[in-house]
Amino acid sequence: MTTRLQERLSKAGLPRMKFHELRHSAASLLTAQGVPLRTVMDVLGHSTVTLTANTHGHLYDEAPQEAAQAMDRALGQLGSLRRQGVK
Image: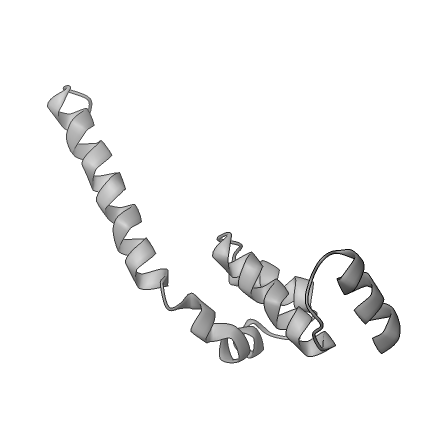
C-alpha cells in the first residue's frame, strides 16, 4: 500500500508523505473550508467528535475570530434592516 500511495502522490504532483500525514492534511483542508467538525469526524472515520476535536482541535484556532466576524456581519445586516424600517 505504501508504494501505491507514493506513486499516486507523485502522479498528483504532491510530496512524499505517510498515510497519517495525508489524513491530517485532509482534516486541515476540510477545516479550512469550514466543514463542520461532525462531518470531518465522519470522513476520517473517528468514533466520536471528541476524538476528532482532541486530535485535530488545533486546526480550529481561528474559529473564535471567525465566529466574531460572522456575528459582526449579522449584526451589521440587522442594523441596516432596522434603519430601513424592517422589523
